[in-house]
Amino acid sequence: MHKIILLMIAIIVVSLFASLFIYSETRTVKIALIYGDLLEVSEAADAFMADNPVNLKLLKVRLDSGNMDEVFAELKEEGVKIIIGPSYSEEASAILPFLQKYDLYAISPTVTSAAVVGKDGRIITMSIPDRIQVKKLVDSMKQDGVTELFVFADNYNRTYVDPFIEMLIESFPGTVTSVRASNPEEININYLRSALNFSGVLFVAPGLLTGYVISKLEELGYNGHLYASDYALDKKLFLFDGELIRELKAFSHVAKPLCYKKTMDFVGTYNALIFVKELFQRYGHDLHTTFNKLDGFTFQGMDGFVELRGYYVNKDTSVIALKEMMTFGE
Image 1: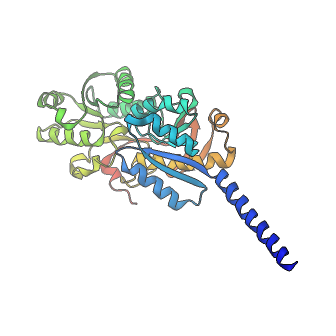
Image 2 (image 1 turned 90 degrees about the vertical axis):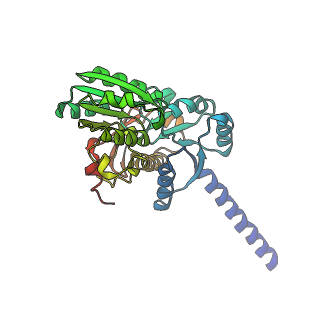
Image 3 (image 1 turned 180 degrees about the vertical axis):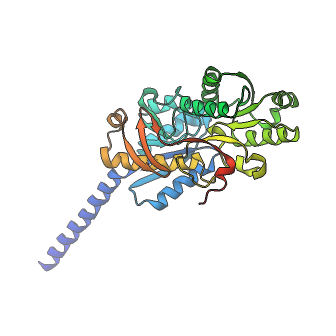
């Protein structure tokens, strides 16, 4: 009899632990981090998971346009509910059909184009709208007395770049001339010589292209004002000599003076994961309902107070000279 009682107790204990395991698995939120060449996105996710004891299972997936349907089908099969990423508006446009097909939702650290943010209620961003960014950049140019603006624009991320330049032309009171390139090799001497005649140069391009063109303009003796959209503030920009880029004024989504090493890609990714944690704690797992009632949702981000307005965030932002960013501590 004693052995039978012990056996029954053992069975009950095993059943209890099995039930707890199953419950834990069902309550674990599975999310996928989609990233490309911006390693700070992956680094930010690692930092968040190390800093926060949360019931999240994070899967990392490098974005590959060649097998998107297969990738998203596997994520759905894995039980993934939310995608963190992508970083570029062009990529967000590419994944939107698969979010719709597999009933998934995405929180981008950095995407800003109205062409994708909020579409079908599927994509939220941790960044502010481009119209606000353009206004702040133009206000800075006006204060500097810039009346003619030459724009070096990326030729890859067109979903972001094209509307950005359209808004810029509408709001800038002077002359705007733009050229496009996908990499430094496409920047020819005629582009550079043309820019010398303008009182301001704006980069709507990644950090590598931005830093390269600035170095060439310096060689030619350019002495006008330099500006950059948020697109330029990645780690590759800071590979260039600090003296070379220190006068560049860039729009920053980072709300408080973090060290320049904490780029918007890092902060945006970290904030996206904070948002996910808060989202499930407050509203549970019904994402279809939740994603359509987020207006006014607030949380404390890595860089300060964040509020959701529509599918964008409202937070402190600024146009800041890189020489100021470089003085910030960790």
